[in-house]
Length: 322
Image 1: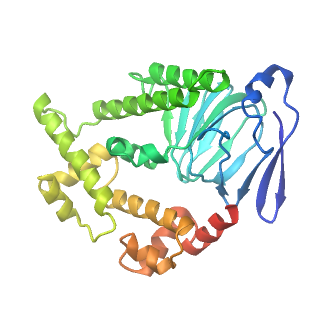
Image 2: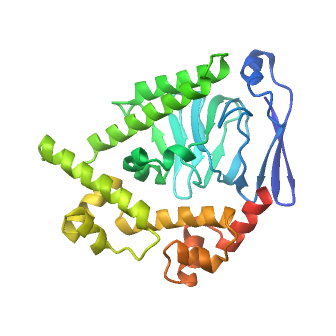
Image 3: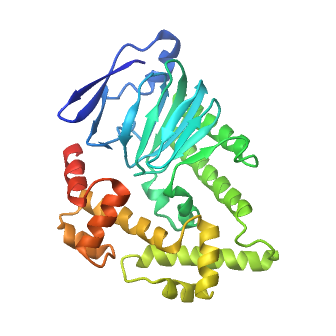
């Protein structure tokens, strides 16, 4: 497949051209695709397959997709040559067989070599990410995840196998392919969570019973934050909920989640604010107060720093796309 970009009113439209015969089979399942991708002001509206919340592409395009975000989980697996993924602070060179996971709503840029190919998975996980069982691995989804045989040696082979099976199910005529893909995706998330627990030293030196108790406490903490992040939560309040002292809790939380309590709290508030700005008919001030920010100035400053645009600009962009 070849795609030719054209700029128009600060939008980028990728027009589809002829599909090479040797990969034609990969595109029969995507024949419902409207024929273009449109990215307006860095926000993309994903076109899933008409009967599902999934779209998987075979992609061999030598094109750079500039910084953008979308509500889909994106997974990229190069099969020939490298592919580069950029967050706002890091660059990941994803080699053949590596895996790059881009969480929903994360700003990212993608760069392809002049020759190469990769599979790109776009999956709606709204129902999964808001489920109680997902709580324990939510902290992993605050940034891009680069999976290689060296960085994830214990789970790499199984994750790669799951992605290959998801791809085969999508491009085959298998019954219940969507259910099968989501089943594999749940298993992938379980593997990431288990690997995270093994790698973290937050609970190192504890016996099995105590470790399970600590894990239960921290999952309870994450559920507590997810439920009350709009309130005036403080470190002291959450530490008391966990049953740990403030200083012990801060240390364990950073090791368990990879981020500080306050950074995670801001992440949750901004995530909710983005949804309200895109969907709810509320003023920016109302959105700020409903998501736990103490003032509109704090909200504007934090949003601008984290998202590279103001809340008002973000609302305009979302409504242009929709």
